[in-house]
Image (cartoon, rainbow, N blue to C red; front, top):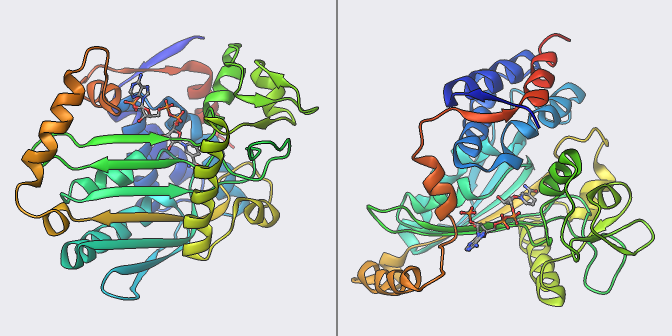
Length: 334
Ligand code: NDP
């Protein structure tokens, strides 16, 4: 794979120009460009510029509104509902998370139930944004069917990511963010593009046979949940927390409504914020530091989120797939 070195500023400019050229206003484009730049900065390549062409497709088809203005409503002091106005999710997060954080700081617990958003990104940005308020963050979202429940050969679940951030005031939070599929579809697509095999257990081909060929999974096959029936149960929970609680589409409903343009479908998102200061009380930070320090001090352990947070400290240009950069530039010509 040939790559081109781009600074973070160049990555941001490229995303901004491409999105505004294709119908997003400044506010909507900036929210997405900020997120994609953060993804490239942290080495979350499957959610950086790689996703830009699909975002453009959704703007061009009119599925996603380039001038959306998400709004929030306080249902109770702890429950916030957000109507995304068919925005890309990052703008909805910028608007909803401060309201969620305020609710959690008042009551100890806050729930943000989002509808009419289009999510095709990593979830760590939203849980880290919650942790910046010294709150615990938990987020999940659905997609369109790509994963077969344990025992089945037919997709019902989305790749249904779930992310968690534990705040460490004055330090980087501890964060995990993972698909409940054995592998995120973006990673499978990248493996297919780059000609790499995927581990057995990642998915089935169109005839229901286990395969290590990513193309056989993306072309009519299905992904499998991680960890067999246990991952399958968590993927089911993500469907219920997201679509059930936010009263938005289950993954199978999102597909039925989608225009098939390849861009992110309309869906919902569930974000929970918890205040350790209110729930655990004084001394929570030091108490939890003893656990986290003990864990990270064990031989062989690397903390989730650590790879990204290390990448974040580098100001060097990021190596971006050259064909992708050319494709994005092409999207500004037509
Ligand atoms: P990974 O399997 O790469 O990583 C999952 C988590 O485990 C990360 O927090 C990672 O930390 C951590 N981790 C990885 N390796 C180790 C290790 N050896 N020891 C300890 N921790 C480790 O992520 P996925 O492929 O499952 O998901 C990739 C992304 O795709 C996620 O950001 C997810 O939100 C996104 N996604 C989005 C979807 C959507 O519809 N919007 C759908 C599905 C996925 P670190 O980051 O530091 O490597």
